[in-house]
Each structure stands twice: as C-alpha cells, then as structure tokens.
Amino acid sequence: MADPLKVRDARDVETAVRWAIAQSKTLEIVGRGSKRALGRPAQWDATLDLSALNGVTLYEPEELVLTAQAGTPLREIESLVDRSNQELAFEPMDYGPLLGMPHGRSSIGGAIVTNLSGPRRIKAGAARDHFLGFSGVSGRGETFKSGGRVVKNVTGYDLCKLMAGSWGTLAALTEITIKVLPRAETEMTLVVQGLVDAGAAKAMAAAMGSPCDVSGAAHLPARVAAQLLPGLGAGKAATVFRIEGVEPSVVHRARVLSELMKSYGALAMVEPQRSRHLWRAIRDVTPFGADGPVGTYPVWRISTAPTEGAELARLISEDIEAEFIFDWAGGLIWAVLAPSDDAGEAIVRAATTICGGHAMLVRAPAAIRAMVPVFAPEEGALAALTARVKHGFDPQGALNPGRMWAGI
Image (cartoon, rainbow, N blue to C red; front, side, top):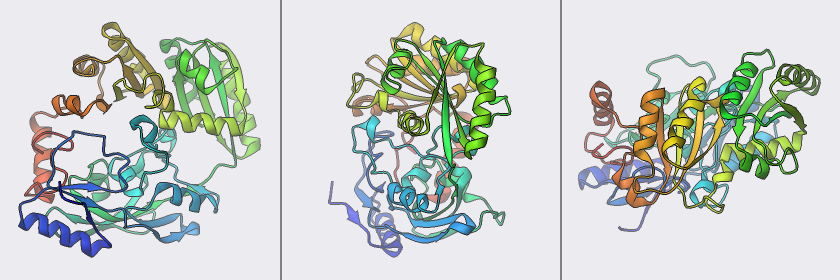
C-alpha cells in the first residue's frame, strides 16, 4: 500500500476523496489509529490520515457546547472540559487495552463514528445522544454539514444519528460538535458480594428501578473482582453500583441503596478515588486486556435486554469456556472465549438469536475476522436499507468498503 494521504485541513480531505473517486480507488479512513484492528480486515488502495485535523475550535462552557476537529485526541478534550468542571457524559471507552495499543490514542472523530459509550450510558445515553453537528466529506467528494452548535437543534434531517456508528463508511468527518455536561462533585460505589449472574441481574434491576439515580451498574466475576477490587471479598464475584452527584446527595442515596441491597448479599462501600479507577477499568475492559492472562483470546461485545444478559451468558458457557463482564445493568456483555477456529461466532450468534440482541467480534486474529461476520449479519429489508444508504452517500464505495460487511 502507498504511503498514507496525510491531509492538513478539510479542503485536503475533499481533494483526496475526489482523487479516489476519479481514480476508482478505495480509502481507509483513519483518525489516530487506535481502532484499526476493529472490524473486518478489508483491503484498501490508500489510507486517508486525518490525525492532523487537530484542535478545539470552539468551547463555550456556559452553553455546554464544544467543537473540535475530528482528529483531536479525546484526552485533550477531556482535560480541557475537566478544567471547567465538565465532562463527556457518554464516557467513551479507550479500546487501547483490549487491542494491545497504548492508552490515550482515541480521537473524538473515532469515538463518534463508532458510537462509543461507557458505563454511564444507562443514565446519560450513547455518543449519538451528545452529537450535535458535524462537517464532513461524503463518498461523492462533496463537503456537507449537518446539525449546529446549540444543544436544541431540530432543523432538517438528523444526520448525526446516521453518522454515529457508521464506522467511516458514509463520510470522512472533519469537524464535530458535541454537548458537554457538568461533572459530578463526587461519587461512591456500593459493592454487593458473592452473587451469581442471575442473582446479580435481579439486584441490578432493583437498583435501576429505585430512586437512587444509579449511574453505573456492573457485575464482575470473581477473578475480575479480585483484580479490580483487591482485598475486598477475595474469591467472590462483585456487583457494583455507582452513585454520582453532590456529596450530601451521594451519601444519602448510597445509604438508601445499601438498605435496598442488604438482602442480596454482603455489602461494602468504595470511596471516590478508588471508585473512579474501578469504573475506568470497567469502561475500558482492562481485565480482558491484551497484556493480561486472556490477552490472546477472542473478545465479543454483546448487547441485549438487561433481563436476558445472564441467560445469554449461560447459553454461551454451555458450549465453550468463557468469562463475562456485565455492564449497563446486564445489557452489555463483554465475553472472552477460549480460542477456536471461528472465535466462537456460531455459539454467540445462536445465543443472541434465542435471547435477542446483537454481537460484535472485537478481538480476534485478522484471518478469523476476515472469515466470520464481525458485526451482526443483516438480512432482507434491513440489509437492503443499509446498502441504499451506503450508495446514497458513497455510490462508488470509496470510503472504508468492507469494514463492516463484505461487499458494503
């Protein structure tokens, strides 16, 4: 492959895409490269490197709005808003630990086009819910804009929802506007020890249905709990609940939640600093990291109804050795499976067919990711709609073709 096309600004991006169209070439769209090992390992003629599109162009803390070029590192944006006691409430994860990459290489563009969201999704929503507007270049070589720089914006088609989760297959985004929110003054985490998966699902449902305004609910198997909560109930699984806000409210709600959870198992409370480290590790799935004991094993990201999470995990573990971390109150399952010829794809798809939901193969050798569907297969009307949308934005298939599904 030729050297990457390193663009300097949005005009360069348009020029590069128009060149690719004229020459019938395909382009791999790359921000800072932290997620290149995600998706199908398709072949492209050239790489369009957006890393030089770097910098915050607008930040108005009073208006809760920030605009940045697409290649701006997330860590720089998070540091900037932190100084104003604000945060990216969708809590975007860093895939680095899972994929054997350094921490901190994610860009805001990559977070948006992959629709990243961390444990706070159950309260604050996903990246698409904080995505206000963008500028980009379509696969037609046309620069276009959508949305705006205000939190309430209902004019025209909401293309932000379409771009979030499109994995760079519809347009090369050059500038992104998101909303930011006030950062919580403090946080605490309540730990319920020793629950099996089904019992944890009931506890998480009860917590989420309570008035305690829980902003994180996860269930960790014994090995993971020992790693993330050393010295706390060694050898036992841990079901953890995060409460955030001003200190008096956090203390009161933690007390109410403790009273509600005492019938489920032994309780412990984690103080703010340790709580922050815990939820960062859950967000980034560091116990399944590439440098750990299961670092070469396949990893799946499975979304389902929270009430079905425990059953889905049970079905998978009947047929293959597996370990699970449950986030989003059981609605997001991170599964690490014993190595196999298909990374357990047939088993995972069968379980999601029974319980509902969809699964993405996050980590596996390139040969396996080329052989099995990485994203949930689409059929019938949905597949036809996806193909029409792709053709509408990128009729020649110049942008990231094959990244999500073969031939698209």
